[in-house]
Image 1 (cartoon, rainbow, N blue to C red):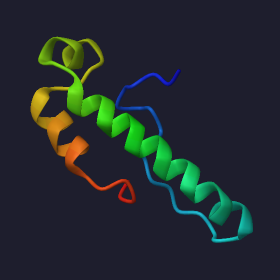
Image 2 (cartoon, one colour):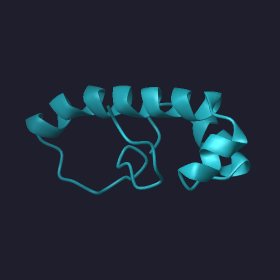
Image 3 (cartoon, one colour):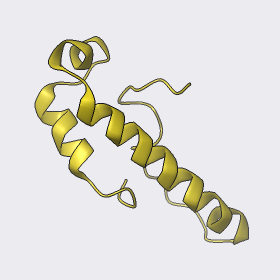
Image 4 (cartoon, rainbow, N blue to C red):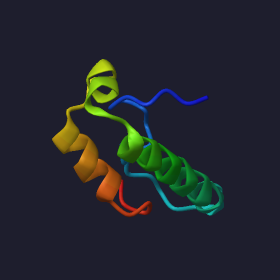
Length: 69
């Protein structure tokens, strides 16, 4: 189970050198972002407050495509 917080890592982008390891990791990162954003989209304001998000921020994050960090 993945904890959904602002520091979950799926929403953070880092600069890395492109090599075969990073290319293989990319679909995994996309899947993680997709799942986390779907969960954010379904949470109510009470749950969002519990994990440190406000409704506005969560809706913006949930609306992003999976390939954008």
